[in-house]
Image 1: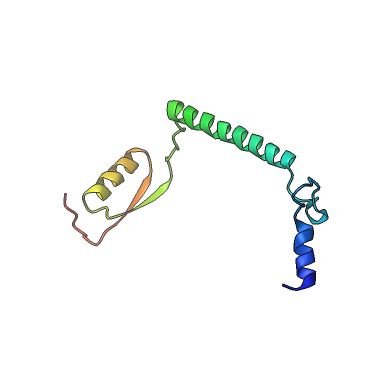
Image 2: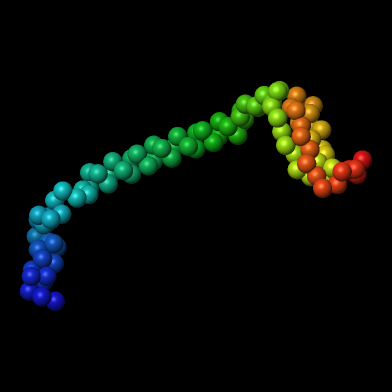
Amino acid sequence: MSVETQEYVNGMRPGPLTREIPECMRDKYTVVQAIIDIIMFVIVGIGYVIKAVYLSIVGRPKKDLKGAIAVVTGGGGGLGSLIALRLARLGCTVVLWDINKQGQY
């Protein structure tokens, strides 16, 4: 390591018996900023927990599908046909897409 590099590295860290912050690190992250970040993390985390508990109890509002257009692939039978029937009951215009033109039913 060159002398300039060694002096730069030594200037970056405080000496073993000093608490002085090197000049190159004075504008960096401080303890106060760390405490503020931790407090904000806890507050935001509590907000997400409260929202999750609320949504698990109350639930999300259901979307109104009347007048919507739904494309159902595999609508010739099985789950595809059941999904298509359910969407039709909810008021959707249903477009079925399947390789089987006859269907199973």
